[in-house]
Length: 177
Image (cartoon, rainbow, N blue to C red; front, side, top):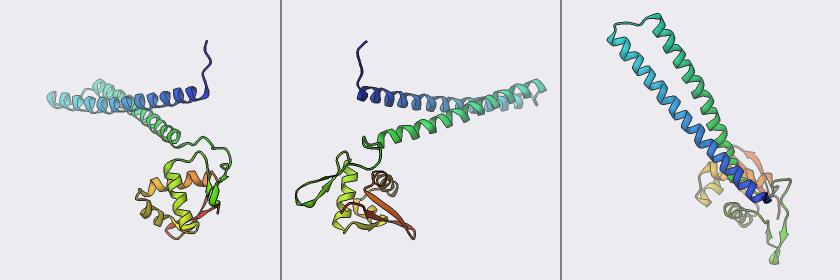
C-alpha cells in the first residue's frame, strides 16, 4: 500500500468534512420538507373527514416528533460541520505557539506562512506606528468587521498583535516593531 503524505491526508480530511457538511444539510432540508408535508396532509385529512381519530392523532404525533428529532440532530450536525469547515479554511500551518520571525533588509519584519489579508493588516499597523483602533482598520482595508476580527484573532494567536478593549472597539497593538 503506498504511503500518503500529510498534505494528502489533510486534503482527504477536509474533503470528508465538506461531504459531512453537505450530507447533514441535505438531511436537514428533507426533515423540514417531511415536517411540512406531514403537517399539510394531516390538516387536509382532518378537514375532509371532519375531525381526527385518536389513532390518527397518535400517528401524526409520532411522525412530528420523529421529524423534529431528526431536524434537531441534523441541524446541529450541519452547524458543527460548518464550524469545522470554516476553521479548517482559516487555519495556518504555524499554529503552535508564536510564529517564527525573520528580519529582512531595511529592518522590515516579516513572518512566513501569513496569508495576504494578514500581511495587509500588519503592513497597515506598521505604517500607523504599530497601534490602531480596530474600527479604523476595518475602514482602511475595506473588509467587513467580522472578517477583520477573524484575521486579528489569527494574528493574536500567532503572537503578532495584541487586542485591548477600547470602548466599543479594540485597540490593536503590533507586538513586533
